[in-house]
Length: 545
Image 1: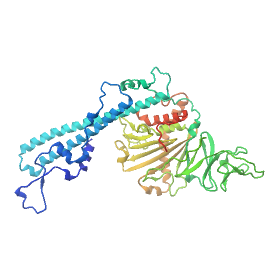
Image 2: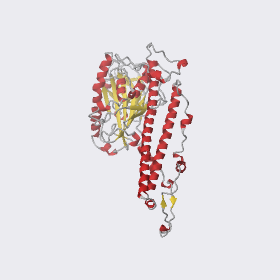
Image 3: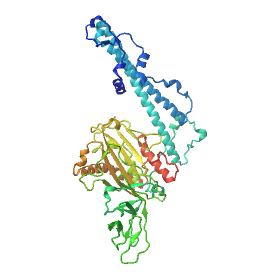
Image 4: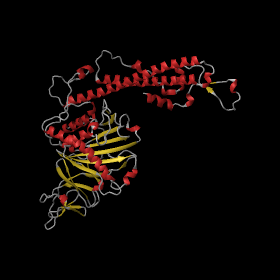
């Protein structure tokens, strides 16, 4: 609040200060055109000051409009309305606090003005300064009260978001509890009663189930464009099926089944010949749509193997592994404006993007990437070295979003369906990340993580890093080895924990047994994932592409 007051005071034009002309004969000899203004004189009322400083403080006191809800039961909509007025009141109160401090500043200037001293005794000035000291103490006390009110209002909003999440969890995991599901006739339950309801949990336990076919009906980025040359192939596993990427005669990428129709030989062991992939066993050649166009030493048969829709956009190769018709547009994974990609390609390097195969289920990896509260405990030798452990970690997000920002860490984060995590990190001195938003930081690191479900216990991870500073780093030879080493260090700190999670999950432990406030984004991902598996027509938290 002190910073807000200082910023507000510094932003006001000097011409708005209350002054009156001093016309003593003592100053008649001063050059023409120079005027001296004394700050003392007729005192102005608070309303006069308010009118001079314009609309900054011209905000109506909202208390007269607050709905009278004392002693009443509130439903969610009524509670949100009350919370909205709480925020409006906090805004109005903060403006009044700022105005009070600014007026006291004016009075201090009046008392200490050299021109005023000629007309006031030392005793009078001491008395006035003592009075101002008392008023300033009271103003500071009011500032602390306002800060507490803001914290309370934010806590209310966070709690109501938890209620919404709890309701969604209850709907997803209804197990015949003694607590009846609320109906339209009981929609006016009190918040206090809801607070006492037993907390529901997500059920993510037991051996990893086969992926639901509906999860395949999305575009998946599976490789970086720079890796796929005209004469190269990239074998991948996706949803426990083998595929191979290569470029056709037109240079466009294709994705076909990585199994020859003749004797089931892996095609990626062969070569690319004139835009066709040639099997190394008997030389059968396939185009990007899976059609066999060449069968040496025998009569050509009408043979075709499976292929997937495959597109190239923004330096990445995308496939559509589902049975539904693919959507016409692909999500954008480009870093924000002003960022330069550093860890996908470098000027003097042939291979520098980071692609890894990890022995964990991709949902568990996404859970880990969407969580930051573990950093001061897990990443103590890498990026979180020196971080203090805050008393409260929050993830603040819109009511219906899969993105938001961390508090107290300057990191914005988003889950972008079906398997991407984007984050922008404000860079400051090591151990000094707390207390700043990304907008307050002058330099940033942007990360993209893509978690492709290779199989039920294996994930293909694509990583790309971008910076909005130090573009010269991109031209340093072998710099990509440093980036890769750092990324692997961070990942290894997580891997031993997530692999342990997976072992216990397979043996029946629930890895989402007790979600807490900072698990918000991970919970929303799991609710989205459950909705996909259940075939919901409207997926929660999603926004149109």
